[in-house]
Image (cartoon, rainbow, N blue to C red):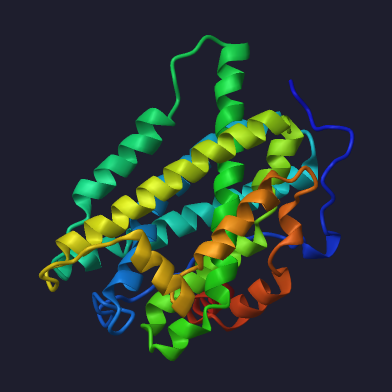
Length: 303
């Protein structure tokens, strides 16, 4: 087992917070297909989350349930259980957007079938003999999740600060879904990386699986944005290009290309720790005012 090197990445202790799943619900009947007014490309690029996350986060939960018996640190074990609960709710919440898209004339099934195949078959369980081979595949997936979580936390931090979406009059229900989810990604941003350090922590595995995760995310995201633009029934010549993404990033309605590229060397730094990025205080502050999170808390108190 390839454990961490002599100098461990140092977490920021004040950024840790107890994790709990919030049983949110959203009503979509008033949300338009182009929920960023006048900018279908920006809205559809973000809509790719609804296609990727249900299968991806179900996969996270499946892998982590296999890992739970291997965790010897009780605090980390509690964090992983909280992480599992939050990710299960994220998957459900995004999955519930898909019927609304179908009602608006955009059926995502051809794309989601490919995403399901990726997580269930390509990255799913394999028939391997007990011992080294089976553990190797489990550790590969733990490391891939840590790399993906670097980017989900990046996106969470971005959407919490994306004031341009408010200025453009973006649909408030969709914004609340994205910011509730983003806030919880910031809340639990350290869990996947700390689990990887606890079980393996090898730098070569971290770098290799980052390359796998980053390449897959870029490919899937551009493919998803293209799928939405080409199948949007209200657009006659919908298209999606890197130039469009770069332009939208400069305008503030999508993450900027420069910020995304600068996040790469941070993750690959040997001193990297997710707690060094984003703000738990900001995430918790949003969750205190989120309409969906507040309704979930009130329902829990009244139960």
